Length: 393
Image (cartoon, rainbow, N blue to C red; front, side, top):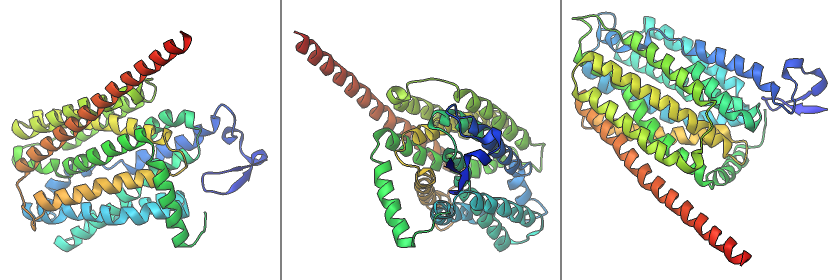
């Protein structure tokens, strides 16, 4: 008997290693999940990243705050946006492994440029290659769904998230098929709801992690005192990984209470960002950032497996890619308006006040939507009960 592997090829079931055989119990998920988790762990093991801002502002690169915050960091946002669409098209066309390989090569290039590149233009190119790295993450997070049973989506999503913390048709036909699948996928109301939250919140999340080092630098300059950026990133990642792992085993009625949960936790995120911005104490900033990351990683994991569960066709890269593309389009607009030197070029503290208000607005939207959905469901149940009683009578 033949079965389809994760790369689109056919393999004989008899030739599969025992640990990879497709059984009714879904045992085939173990090895690919372990491999993906190992890759995600090592690919995201970047101990220098929490100190990027002090490094760029320091004597090694000798860049100014205006160059770093308003001319260099926006390049990553724009690059990510421009590259994401061709990347998830290529993921659908070439499958997942070549895209993951491209991510690894881009990480190597980024690392070498970080060590040896000098000057504004060179560092801007570095940000471009880092945009390639983040754009290709879509292959990592969607690959697992092509090789495991739907019953295991919640578990494998939590595992991959915690660790990370060939078909041929002409191009016109591919685009037509993608458009058809796009309409089919987003016709699901639960999928649409989780996707909207994904796009809106990921936009704000990217902005905050991209500029939080600048906030810390202004609250407590690294030249005058010791900083613990690396430790904070490690703690937030570790606690986030634990929370994400736990949520993979939680049974909850996300269909009923999902929107209310998104509203509540988005409000917590808004509060943590507000405290981060207004209380000019580095330890308060650190603690608020840890809370912010834990909540986001928890919710994005839930959103990921909820979206995957509600997909009617195997277009994981397409949906994840579109959601992220919308997030980046919003982030690019936000960056251009409030950060870019060609826009308002606001200071860091004003930026973070805007980000806090942004998450508060997300919370309000989902509170209204969730309340409406719950009332609608209860009314529907009441009508069904009345009809059942009437039919018996």
